[in-house]
Length: 567
Image (cartoon, rainbow, N blue to C red; front, side, top):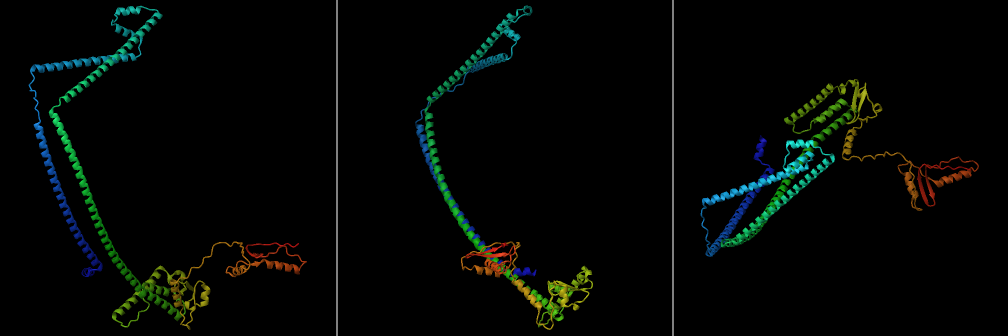
């Protein structure tokens, strides 16, 4: 609660900066809004003035049109010729009855003609259907009888059945009947075609007559144009002219409006671009200020964090490390023995918990300092007790069942633990310890020379290795040893022998260099000393040969075996 009140009473620098920025931008916003309102009012006034001017122009134009129309109407009325009209009298009852009778007669006649035409079409369709059907002898006889319009009686039928014609005559008779039927069918089809052609021709003549009648009536109507029609034609032409003038004026006015709108749009776009540029510059300035403030805050935070960590390491960590190292050194110097594992674990737990090993010296021993020292001692004791209890509970350390009758000791931090079975640490000698524990690095300290402090030397060496780590060792290649054959060529006195000598002195001494001339000289010397004694069957000259051919030296790095047979 007090922190909130303190923040309200003493505002932070960032809060003041943001408040100032907000106030400045709010003032700029009010100024921009006033400027925009003023521009809007000016544009509204200009728009109203343009509207009034355009309205006056339209009024003047309409006034001139009315004057011209009134003048034209006066001239037309002066030239009007009145044509007498027929008196509209009512028709009499006899005329109405005659007209109605005429209409009824014409309708009845048309209906009669339609019925006859339909009967003819039906008869034609029936005849055509009958012709398409397969005809038997009975059908042909019946058709012939129908055509002759003399239906036979019962007696005639019985007599015809009793008459028996010979087969040849009956077949001829049937053939004649079929031929006649076919001829009659063809005649009926041709007659129907002629009838249809006549009907189509009459219809065409009727249509042509109607077209002529309409054309004649149209010509009569055009010839009967009166003065009123000509006056209407004049008015129509005048109206068309006025319409064309209005259209031209409207097109011109639209072009002016488009040009004005284009200028206004360009001006508005320029104004918007200027406002956007100003806003962008203001935002860039604001962002730069905010970035600077944020960078300052981050720098202060990093500085405070660095100071806090540095003070923590300098005041607490380094001091505890030195106290721990001095504690180990003092114990080793005074006792000359290894540190028991339990004691070392206690010291390590005390160092991890941050409890000092001995109180710091202070000139003014006030009550608060004494109380703090007592609290630190209590913390150390509690930490040691906690470690002992955890060892007892987990059966670790000296409570481990596998380590009964043994003593464990540790020479240095991160060093192997030395275990002595059945003897205390005081009985352990350096020779025995080194023989039994080869992995344990142990140095026997002589109490006669207290100025030598290997613990402090080890700490300094460890810190030096951490600050300046040694270079990593070169890795040995995992390649097998393979024979290589090489040749060294050069001009006389160019340093070939020197190079070979340096190669022989290098750290890789797996090869040996031999000169061929020396082997030849030795062989000849053996032959001269013992001319009668035979040489061995083979002579191994060398595994690595240097042969001189003229002024050229060849280095053969390979397994070359030369066999010399004596004859």
